[in-house]
Length: 161
Ligand SMILES: [Zn+2]
Image 1 (cartoon, rainbow, N blue to C red):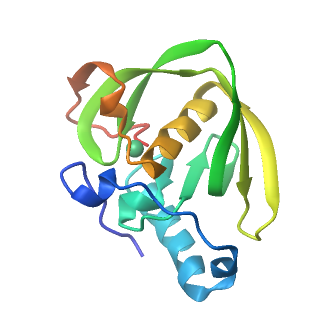
Image 2 (image 1 turned 90 degrees about the vertical axis):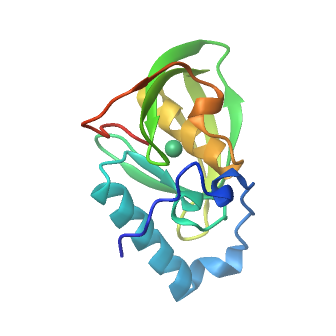
């Protein structure tokens, strides 16, 4: 089901999300949440989405690049490169605004997958950016808190996260 996106003026988006208890993974409610996150992300042309953006303050994010799609449950960044890079970001929760954000160019992430198994992997480039943006959401942080050169873009939500 496509859910309503929680935008920056709704207080819940600023809440720190809670860890998901592992036993919750096998519930129908959780499986439905994953489907809703995916449907909502694709319906809004996003490339990533956090559960808090559809009103569920739990530590679950969906991230994509051209080839893959990953659900991250209780994710943590366990290593970040010294090298930081500026790149443009937008956000489904901040419609119409884009800005430049400085992020680590490479990261190592550990998370549970949807089966509850530990998964550790490296990400770089735009995919690393998407992950850092979504993990910020889990702590109630929006890209506009970190961005410079914020500017309005009217027509498109391309690459909103
Ligand atoms: Zn976002």
